[in-house]
Length: 271
Image (cartoon, rainbow, N blue to C red; front, side, top):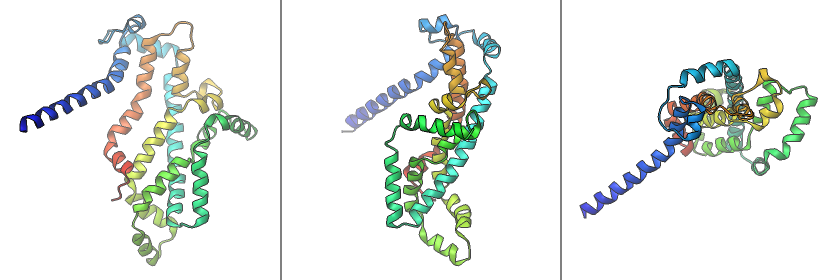
């Protein structure tokens, strides 16, 4: 019996190792490709090369990756902070102050998640054009400040929030905004972290809206820069993979440094 259990356990571990290798391989190939010449990448070379320095020199000579990286980082941080603030307030209000009218409004918000962005892209562009918000940071982040998904996410995680704590704080004389800042945010820290990671990745990888609203090279973000490298007559895949590697670093660092809180926030734990 023990031998069967050991064999089954070994089979499970073998399967998990194979799945992990398949998951890690694209990242490994991306890093390896950044060190190889374009011809070697096309040939499918999967070992480290000696062309990294040349790719870096080509990157500095042909693209403004520093400017694009800063643009992406700026709009992503601003958009994430504003989105978390607005959506957490909305989720807090929907759960703590519940009535039939708010439930109907929440259902309408959930229905809005079924509308694809392509359906509202043209009206958004015309509206932002009339408001003179094109080619601006605020024009980039405004559509992502409030999303139905994040509001629903905060509302669902607030179900386990101890209402007795809010009632005790009200008795002590705290107003609602002070309760939100001094009690709700610390207790719901894992939820805020998970929402911040998801929002950061969504804004950082956003392509369609910045392609429309960011109309100058000075406001170009990393996804637009990487896409532009494939629009040339001959694609330098070594340079392309180097820029993709640089673009991948912030989300990867954020996720792995906050992985524990992300998992806690996803499962809805409250401490």
